[in-house]
Image 1 (cartoon, rainbow, N blue to C red):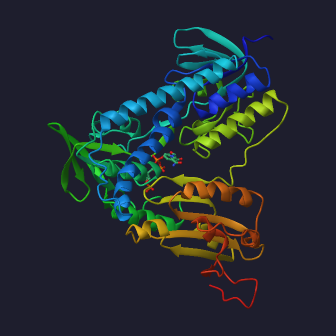
Image 2 (cartoon, rainbow, N blue to C red):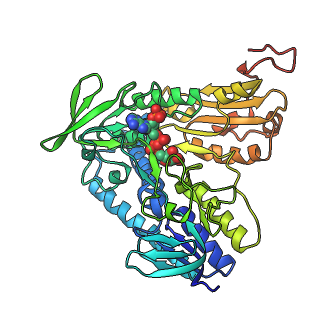
Image 3 (tube, rainbow, N blue to C red):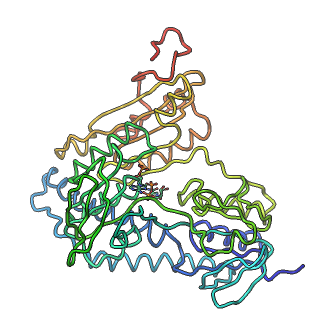
Length: 466
Ligand code: NDP
């Protein structure tokens, strides 16, 4: 049987674009890609990229205060010009969108600016009714923000809306306590909004190492976010230009903008998946095997739509591995076990890889090596904020099984730590490196004694066990 294409990709985000480009340019496959919105997907257009630029914007204001600590007498950052920033941001996103499209065009990928759905195991149908056949189909449609299901929730905004605001809200409420809630609170507070963060739990960033959660919670308050823990909004109501929010304790407050950062769900609706036998999980995610293959052998899926590890670089790796496996005769699976991540808070980021202290304790005897210090740069400028660096070391194998950093540029550090950890480095391997002085990261190779022992009796009987 002949097909119109070797590969038809639905979704022009990080995972889909990578798979299409590699299949076409490296392996000569005939490839088409359908995207109904802007090329680049969530990460480029309404996620990581604009978010990080807004973190930089919010940081730039705080740097003016730091400059005063270094003797600059006139440094003053405010007020923040949102209109000017927004114009520059739009231009940058347009440039990136062009680069993504250009990469596909250069690889001879045919682009269909349209929504697409599956008609059968080898046929894709576009919104205008055109149909194309393909030997393989890759679904990379990502996810979208979910609202919590409370009365009046349509009055609230979601993460996509942050980048499209007409002006910085005077008073903003963010609901949630995950990556997006914490980053958005940091941004909005930093660019001048009086920011309230309402989270139902007792420390933000559930799933992260307990010590990191505590530090992130403290820091949000330190930068001026009004953080309300064990707090739940139950109802939203329009009030002239503002939104009135009622909380579970019965209190009511008015906000200029309310953002839900209450998680994301896979984009699997209207794709015709179940009709042709592609299996969906409890969260409506596409079920795939270790090769990203669905229950229908010609159909594969990568990225957030599969709800495995919902991070851009993971989607890119899954897309690339799919193309290598299917078109390059280089079978490659993605190992999802050791993936680093960073939450871009300010002034200190939270970055993590491997086991948390809680997970390590549950696995067996571990040593916790921890450094806590005031970094020279902010200390000189008058800040007491401490950096925390933590290693979890398996007491039997001496391997580093987890690393967590709360500090400036923690994301940059954890990226490099991912390399030795992936190679199975022991604590002694880290200690063998000579420090680069004076840096923050030198503390990662100069810790001399464990801070505590967890997870049961240490195999070395001379060491006290917890
Ligand atoms: P998360 O899953 O990280 O957090 C969702 C938050 O919303 C949690 O605090 C959760 O509370 C809370 N929540 C969920 N449902 C409700 C509800 N019904 N009522 C009240 N609160 C609720 O999702 P995000 O939206 O923050 O981010 C989505 C994904 O995007 C992340 O998982 C991450 O993979 C990715 N991302 C990565 C970033 C990065 O790498 N820096 C940045 C931004 C996003 P609880 O903890 O109690 O369940």
